[in-house]
Length: 126
Image 1 (spheres, rainbow, N blue to C red):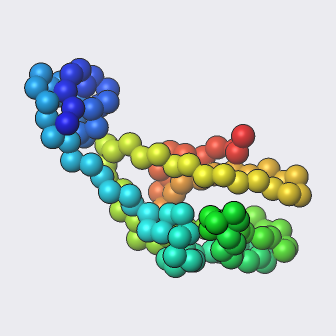
Image 2 (tube, rainbow, N blue to C red):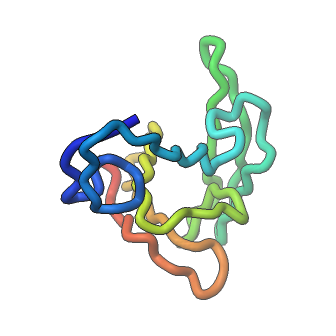
């Protein structure tokens, strides 16, 4: 339930209409499947135009996805195909990543197939 000013869409109902009384808000379910690698690699897919490997490693009781690059390329992807994002909906993307070779990491969120629509996220990792 949410109510109050909604000038920026902060109530999360997909509108900018303020609500004076508590209103049921439809929540968007998690668009990713197996987001924490709890059930292994599926449906995650790995691609690189170099060479590398994607595996699941258990660290202190938690599964993590590990991408190892053997030969550098210009394109490395860890993705799920067929995700559906809702218009005018805020999503939160969070993850932990590091490079043990000193290479920079960059995050780009785009459609995985033509026309490769950029969804507004292209930032270096900090």
